[in-house]
Length: 97
Image (cartoon, rainbow, N blue to C red; front, side, top):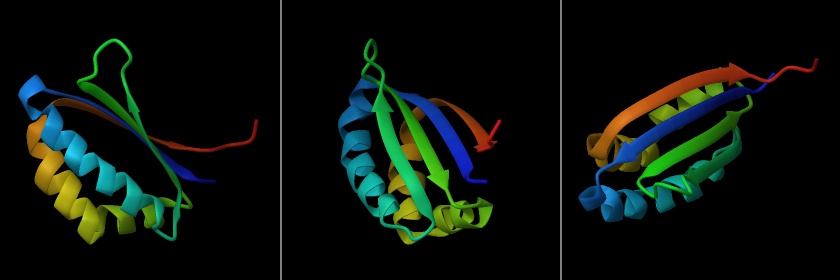
């Protein structure tokens, strides 16, 4: 079973440029992680200040490696997190019905 995560957050208009600048390298580097199966950023079609990330990892250990990575700490924790207005986060596991 894969470990999946959705993260939905909004940012203020004046923070948008900085978030986009940090999100691009975060996505690129996260996709290169050995345990990352998918890392997809989405932007709300009605409100461009709202983002949804869908992440899928081989397992929870691979996710933890992502969270501990230098690029996650630099771009997510250092640049994006302080600029978020609100955040909704949920974890899932894949299953075969």
